[in-house]
Length: 209
Image (tube, rainbow, N blue to C red; front, side, top):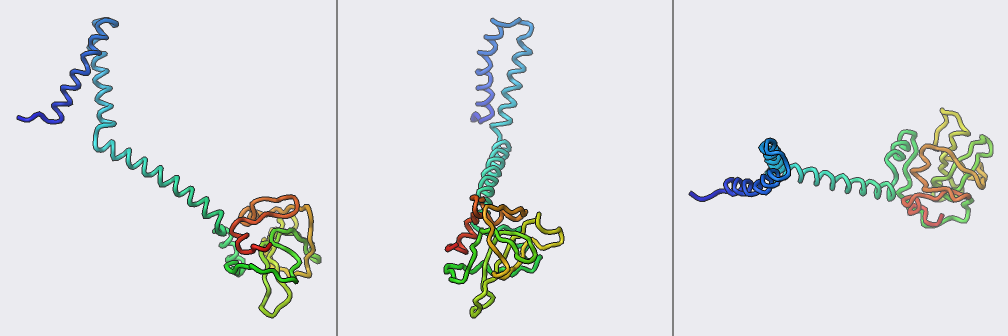
């Protein structure tokens, strides 16, 4: 009868136990040796079950694969957040009736534009301040630009919209002024002391600003 894998394993296990038996016979009390050998055999059995069975390798593979997928997803999410508008921003626009015109790249600036994306402005009549996140002309024939402004939450009440459209001549520029708004991080990366620095996706839409 040919010797199988199980027989080889049992032979190897017996050979492996001999040095331990010799060690315990010298260093330990002889009365404890059988117990200690049984403990060693039990440990070897646990190692075999945890590392040398098909099921254990399947579990290890699944855990490793899950970890790799999780790391790749986190990296993909970070890149998407840097390259495109956040879902929260788009949902907020839709909820408040803000038309999404930012798919158009404004690669030219009209001489009639007074302000840029990222600059902080204040409404002449209503008094609230905010940061410009977009600009657009009402029509091709119009010479009056409209600015989309992310409003400072400290200068309005809770019923006031966080994003408003304002005609250019109703705004004036503020310097060295910051704005507080929960959506600010979705549009800008930092404040440089003069104005806000747009996120990469917003810079691509308004490259001349």
